[in-house]
Image 1 (cartoon, one colour):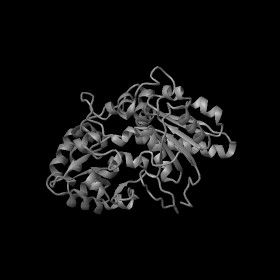
Image 2 (cartoon, one colour):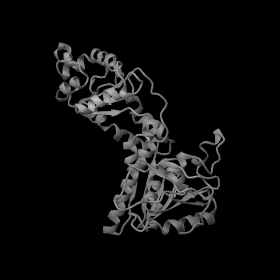
Image 3 (spheres, one colour):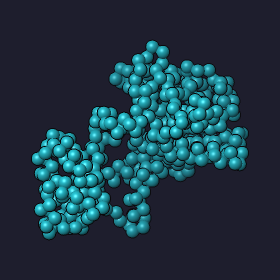
Image 4 (cartoon, one colour):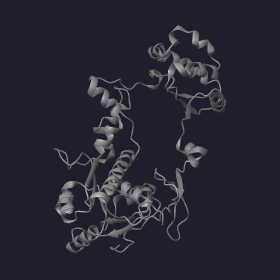
Length: 381
């Protein structure tokens, strides 16, 4: 850890579920000393698999990803003595991170105004559902509500007459966690110059809107946007997914449609399509997208995945595999990218692999874990 980017940086986390712990989880991966403050019942994410009969101390990958390498300290903040201990820990910290709702923080005297007045060098990072002002500042958000539903992101991913499918857990939380981590790092750098801390805030709502900023930008400027269409009506048939004879699928990446068209036709041995009036250029292919996609669907169904992808590589056609999670786990490039890491288990626990955080530093090889048991550590640095 001697060359860790955040060696010596002290972080206090008052976080639950995913978004707040995700921030400090990355900071811990980068070498920070993170004290995770938990109530006597623990972070509720520990028990997320409880309905499946899994205990709250082991075998909960969603908790493990965001909490490895931290120290778990149990404090009952309704107790004056424990709250005083909390204040002492924060006073000695560089960074405080929370995703507790503002009203709850204010009741405890842990709101941004109170702590930054008391500790002017403190960097105070907070994630909320909807922001620090407005009528819904204390409304429950979660990533499904604030990041996906209210931001317009979920609506934008499907055709206008369809309701979105079930959302995969934690996506908005992790995106928002990365946003706050970057802001906290900027504030830490600024403190080196000024000697003063800052309040750094973001919300699930804001990051959801930023995620689809292209669509928002067009609508704000021109008052309209292109609606999402089903795959078989995608107006960019060369930036679409197709299934092969063996059931595997790929995604074409022909963003420069007219430049990529001749090489693509050569790769699939369908140069005859170049003379079809409805397919002569990118505009006509967009207008007649349903027709050309049907032709390509039928053609790709005649050969297996290995055949088509080898032909793409031979003719420099840009593409990507449409991986399932098991596919990705066994993808040589995914493995080489460092996406998965070996965890340091607790004593008596079998070794296991986990998802890596998304940033590497040259010359630094972190030790991942162990994941702390509830209340495993003393309330001190």
